[in-house]
Length: 485
Picture 1 (cartoon, rainbow, N blue to C red):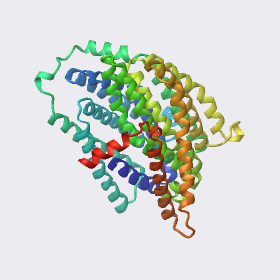
Picture 2: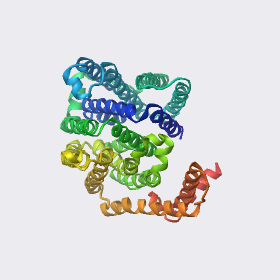
Picture 3: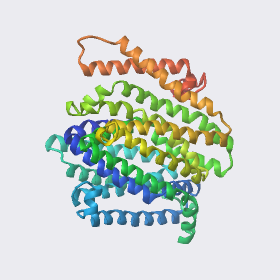
Picture 4: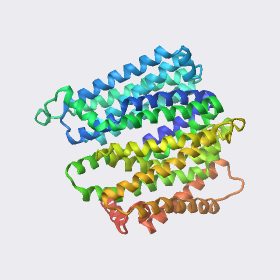
């Protein structure tokens, strides 16, 4: 909850303080280098997390991956500095200077270090302590951001510096936790030669090299086309919508690594029944959580844009209303994808992903390009529409293979994806009708509608617990247990 609230405060401050154009430039640069980071990763982080979950005492594995991470970071930041200011750099980053380019590359590298550190914390079953410290660091850094915005005007350069410093501090805090709870010497596994780890990573990750390469090129191309053909303001609309989508996904994304770890352990033990049980229960539950946020915000996108950005962002309502539907199937995609990683089916995962990305690029061009260039000129909304539709298709292709592997019903899970948002949509309209009071301030009406919607969703889940992946009687048993404590 603390991470959600701090993210919400950041969303309410930064887009309004920077404005659509500067925020669009920030989003364009950070997205570029986050995609480069994903290319350098090539699935190695998934391999690292899976293997460390299976061999928690393998300190050599941690040391090897840290070296890999260090040299990839040096290459990414050094390459950015070399290209910045050159004709190629001006073409790639649309005239942005070396300072912002180097800041964006550094930001991407630091996020990689933070993600890796959190993976180590999770793999060593320090999740509760780690998430508590992470939440505390987010609270402190958000208070710093509030002070900066309140006392000084926020500029794009300052926001980059703030991000890099606060992320580094969070890495330091989590590293201290790992050192404080170091594994006993008896549990440690003797480090293997570097070539052993290289072979292990290569066998696991090499099918993902093509996936990472195509993914980087396609996503960078999409954002570059949006920046050059629609402008930085449309990039800002897309950025704000994607940040809100991340907030919708926040409650379920934390479970992705934990579920990957549990799938990896169960697969290593050949415990198919446990994998089947987790998939059947947890994924529909987390999908319902994501849908709860996504459906409400999609229906009230105009209010959300007004609250976060003000009148300057009003043209971004359409992009927002479509984009917030993305987290529902992103939840399915990430959690279903964790089965591919845990079971080593990276070749199949690659083939599905590449096919979708390549097929989606011409559709994106048609939706985004200006009318005079043969497109529909939808800008950010066009890119978002392509993403949501393509995500739905790809996720269900992945789901088809996973249900075959786990001997589950694909059609039941597909029906669940369609029924849940339809029921929640009915709750939105019913809640809006019940608490519609003329003359009530806009913010008050928005909050009151949200409370009515939440009440109706809770009632529906109590009546039909299967919508949240639960069985009748489980909610009551859990409530009695909590009440007893």
